[in-house]
Image (cartoon, rainbow over all chains, first blue to last red):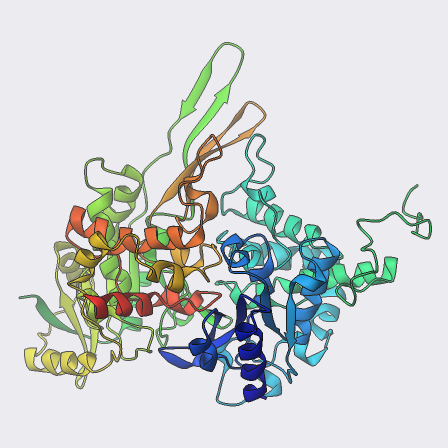
Length: 270
Length: 337
């Protein structure tokens, strides 16, 4: 499969159909870790790989957060199934046109949750939730009384250091001026205390409602290991129940928080 | 020549200090991570760890700190400064890379303006380091002039040797603690020397660093910045987990007509770090922001204070969401010197 991937990349570059191939390569110092690469010269094609260590959702490099990548020309991007959903979401939000990106879809059989979990081969225990299509963790927390859930998140957010790794790695967090960076007025306190952190993390989850496709990059990159995606999955469930909508499955179905539909449930208006 | 005394173990130090009702901070297991937290029972400390998620930085330069309270009425404004009395504190078991980071940061915070918040915390804290017996290939302390058993920054450094544990005492604070712990039996210099030889074998990643500042001075526009650093997504994971990074932002948090002025961690890797009031951003593209990080740590800080603003702890490499390996950038620069 890797030879086929490299051949496709080489053909795309030499025929000038694309200006850059965004993919994965091994880190030079460590063959148990991969990193994103931006291939513009054919001699770098050999660095491209695909394996269970290819964790990153590379879609983030298609967004307007990375104009310097957009300047490299029409991109081809190596994408796993979950990553493709975020590309479709971006097309739906008019961030790019379908014809302006070549999606090199790869048959992924699962990735490891984090580089730290890699033992030499992929095991069920080392896979992230998304790969198992399992919603067990959401159900566990959901079954608890609301006070316990509130306590859980309050304790988790005490650890948050406001590094914004979650925001920066997310393909859907591409606002020119994030609400947490706005002053005059300051909507969310930037300080890394419990109050500011609670506001930040909840608002980010709300701004992703109907958009997040649970690639779980936020979980992977959080330096203090807050299980951020659990919140997103809960909201995803609400969106599915109330609007019968699943994000990132096509580019046509309008997202529920952008469109008014007469079929929307009004029961909450009292 | 530092004084060497025998000590039972890092756990025994924690136990003794707790029995004397001292405030003790030690590594505590939290899920898959270890974090440095206050402990009230010896059993809560876990010294069988490689590296903690956060460095000691948070105990001297907290992620967020109130520096002033204010309240306004129609006729007057009241300002209230915080009480800078901190309890006597003992940090036990921090790695040499984290301890050395404190002596590096001291140079800045006690330079032309003494940061009273930082200094008050430093003065009330004693550092008991714990030499490493393990390193991974993201550790590069030896290239930063340190070592897995370096006593730099530790008042007492505990070293595991063939014969047990040794306490290497380097400062007056260390001597004071040694008497408090009633350490009396002298340790063997030969025993310490052999432990040092073993420590020297731990680090597998090394590069020559003395030529790096010079290269950085003449290569501000080099093409390697763009090619190696563009994948940076501009978060602050490296900066905030780094034991030596110290940039901060001052913000006011009003609630009605009163509130608090706070000092918060900031990062040059974030897009808005140098944004001007006009909206203009001199570091408009990500590689320029990452370049600044390298220039500050390996060029400007050396000019100013004679040391790298880095201890080679490797956290930046481990936490990076896109696996941007800072040591790889330094190795590339070193190869071009």
